[in-house]
Image (tube, rainbow, N blue to C red; front, side, top):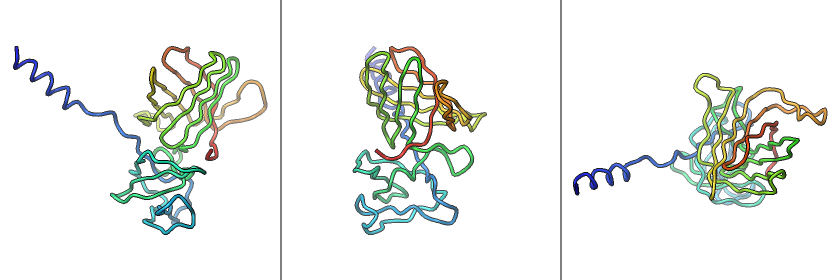
Length: 198
């Protein structure tokens, strides 16, 4: 019996941790670079230059005003402006890290920023703050993304698709459609568009 308990404890300890969200350079022209800086300022010394198609960028969790985030790229640590980060490699279906999603009747909104998501579910009179834990493309449709967030007491699943979307109330057109699911609430659908750092 003791051996079984030890084996189960060992398996639980060896269970893989939740995957870390990995970012890529977004919105930087071909041949140009994203500068990683010593401090969260466009005037701070450059620590490293990340190529326009750089991938494998992870966040430390530290943030600063105007969208600056501390990042780690090829074992170097420094600050980058989050508006130049996205999900997926450089290409047609890359998703920006800053994204505003919303829906009408019922009214709701979810704002993505590097490493985090904020949700306001007006119809339920609830607000949520999530830490992003996963971003992945569908295996057979690279135009569809699943973004996952964790919080107490629930989690967020946001499916985003590259396709024209209309919010149903205005003539505004959006480049992404979405379906959002938050623990304990009904699934809602809406549209998304790139956002500016808050």
